Length: 127
Image (cartoon, rainbow, N blue to C red; front, side, top):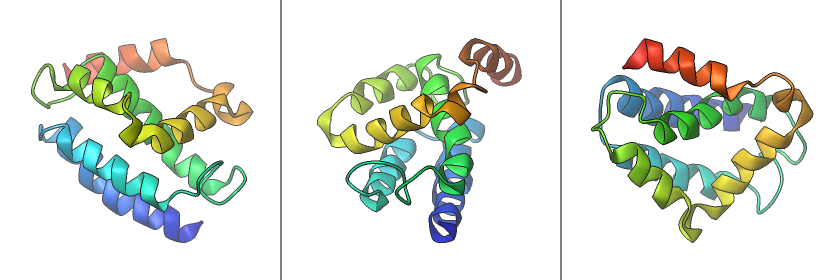
């Protein structure tokens, strides 16, 4: 679990998430990081089998990634968010999409996430 969290923070958060949403690099960086992430996941379920600190660390960034791409929030080139979402709907990303859906369905996440509120806060902060 600690290795997964350390990898996720270094590769996804400090690398891809910040590059795309804060520095304005292409969403391709996020897509590549998601392929790498899904290669580290088990075939089904959560990162370490059952819900753990791994999901608690990853959930806010992964779910916000989808939300921000869908609503074109961030410094990346306008239009790339919708293109990235279309790419995420392909078979290439099936495992990581399933992982995010599992996270969103888990009670401890589901009971604390209000996408409309998060989206409005992000739009105010980034656009």
